[in-house]
Length: 168
Image (cartoon, rainbow, N blue to C red; front, side, top):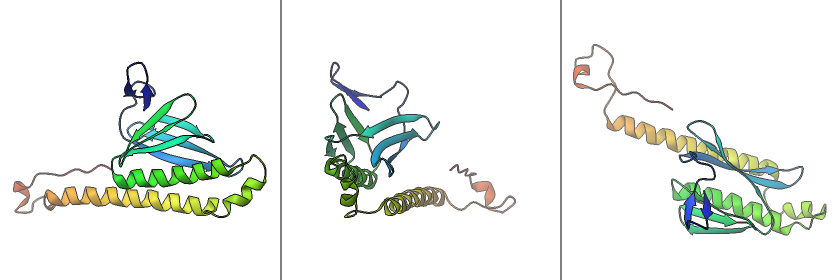
């Protein structure tokens, strides 16, 4: 979302972009730059593709709503959980630390060595994504098990059981 100064409201970057999205922060190790990229889960539409710039102001307004400001615009993200917000915040703060410590020359590469390497960041990112997928699967399984067992056709109790379909 972006903040519209005239209406004093948060609005989608483009109309029709509301909905759950997967948000990632990507690190281009060749140029040592970072991007926030969001893809809508429903139709894989890119809803945000933002280059993190030096001097960006980042604010965790609430545990599940975070915002940032550059010279032109204020951006905001609502997260489904505090855990997702914390994961994003950690990645954003890491990126900002790298960006704000750069002086524009090769010496900035030496400063990166104090934090995780790009390979370690990729591993961490994959682990977080796998953890989120596992949590979603466990949540789906809990919802499915709450409806009762799925019985095979012809089982004496199957007439009293409603069919359950899962998508995922």
